[in-house]
Amino acid sequence: MWRKILGYSYNLISLAGILLAIAGVSLMVIFMAIGIIAGLENPYLGILIYFVFPGLLVLGLLLIPLGILRTRKKMLREGITEVPLYPILDLNVRKQRIKAIFFIFATLFFLLLLALASIKGYDYTESTEFCGELCHTVMEPEYTAWSNSPHARVRCAECHIGPGAEWFVKAKLSGLKQVYRVLTNSYPTPIETPIPNLRPARDTCEGCHWPAKFYSGKAKSFFHYASDEQNTPREVNLLLNLGKAPKTPHASGIHWHISSEVFYLARDAKRQDIPYIAVKGKDGTITEYHDTDKPLSRKEINEKAPRLMDCIDCHNRPTHIYHAPGKEMDESFVSGTIDASLPYIRKVAIELLSQEYKTTAEASSSIAAGIRDYYAKTYPALSKTKAPAIEQAVTEVQKIYQKNYFPKMKVAWNTHADNIGHFYFPGCFRCHDGKHRSSDGKVISKDCNLCHEVLGQKQENIKPGTKVTGFIHPIDIGDALETTGCYECHQPAEM
Image 1 (cartoon, helix red, strand yellow):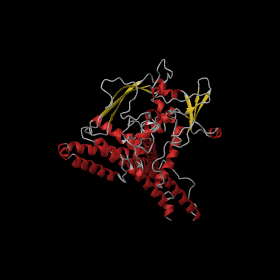
Image 2 (image 1 turned 135 degrees about the horizontal axis):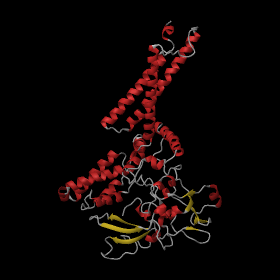
Image 3 (image 1 turned 30 degrees about the vertical axis):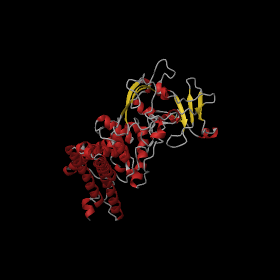
Image 4 (image 1 turned 135 degrees about the vertical axis):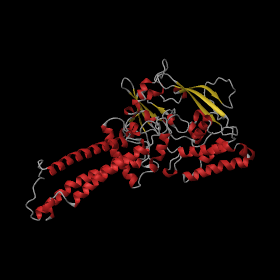
């Protein structure tokens, strides 16, 4: 009998939908206000505001008509013939008119909130907080590296997705798989690189970095320190042949690799072993270079799709950069954050950083104890007079560990190869090893001067004022300088 009085629009399901919709709207507005007033930027707060609460609103709005339809069918089954096919609306009746106006404005309000949540939600999924902080453990290494990189003000999506709807959809579909892996704890440790389906750098990187406009060279100074008692400073000044250098055999400089069409095949997923290279000339002819030690067969070459070389093949860690302990210590000396007058501090710090620790907390305590104990035992007087400098060194070395080592994800500074240069990893020498030859006898040169020239060098085995025309190793290693790659000694050891 109550249905005859109240009608089929009044039922538990519809009332629950109304309450859910009101709750979703209220919570969305309240939490958004709290975030704005308090200045909170928490990734989980963003998930609630832009996804969970709008989801409650949508669910509530769906439950209202569902409850009405269910109740109407039930009333028909019970033989209540007065049930109209559609709701009766008479705007001449004041009560119904008020309800209609309320319904229209409530609907518009809800739609406005949903539109706002959709826009903000889209923007939020493009934010670095969403990418780096939401899945904290998984993305901590990459997010930390990004935070300390030259691209720290560039959002993840600008490089990983770029403009256009096509790659946005691809990225979100790929993201669903990543979310599943996080929820089921089935993600790899460490995260696998390189990403096979990453958007070509020509569509992303070259929006800011335009190889065709790189001209001439760039002078750069590299500061190093010896792992001796004095932490002896060393300096190498290079001219990097980045772009066009008129009247030279390689007029495009290093970025010739991008201005030309260079294809290659790698044996491994990390693209470190490259046995085959093909260069397309301006006239369309293809010159093939094969690794003379371990060449691919013609069948293997034909079965694989060669990769067109782009920025990421050399700048493979342009943002997610991890530094070797030695490089970090050198930079700390240069910046003055660690006192270079502390005897053997570089050697001690590198040894402590190179040990394996199960957790970051264990590493921090071991580093602190190791540095303090070393100076207390070896330099007892200095440990008192230089106590503040020693404590500052402890803090900075702990920071170095926290920026470059992540035990939970099994990531260390040398987990992922960095292909820029050739100091710690093969890098340039993956192709420029003097072993890749073409059928007509051409060789991909190993000559370092193709990419850079030594302008000057300062170190303990070079007399001040000496004109240096080629790199001089701080230790006499004989012919190994020409026959051995730098990375073969410096990975993972330090000189």
